[in-house]
Length: 229
Image (cartoon, rainbow, N blue to C red; front, side):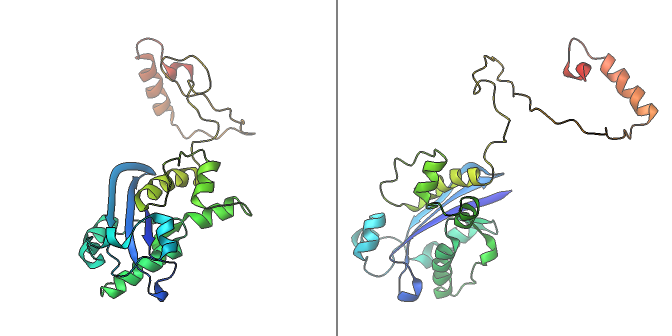
């Protein structure tokens, strides 16, 4: 399954007040794992940079003055995200700015149903706790030491790791032997203790299939896992 972890930086908190996008960062996931493909662009917001926003992300009006306008990078952005779910921390904020820019360019808005809001996920999982990106990085031991200021691509990379933890992280009870302190050249996976069923499931194998399987197992050379079952 393809997903896009996305973050933006802006000149303020609301497009209704005339604030604009100034940076977009995206990280591609395939089956919840980063593929190495990213999309990153700075955008000229065509306005000044308020001091409060500058303190957050460090993007000055001068730095952004020679960067492309949103409509000039829009098609590349839409091609990258296609119809993939968009994993966003506080999705209504970023989606609001993206859709304001798309509307300004005469394009169709992105549906909110396309967004996966990790802030809502975190609030449900940790009610009453701090659930900003820095707090979640600390909770999940995600290294955010390079996050001196907000940055769309860096924040997307951090959010991708946080998202993995929010959806379950590693399977509980399943770990590499080397991680548990056991000596293992092969790095075998530790077995998970199972609670036996009160009543075994009825086998649907026919006598013919059972005999064929027994013949196959007997034909295997050496010791195999199958012979222990």
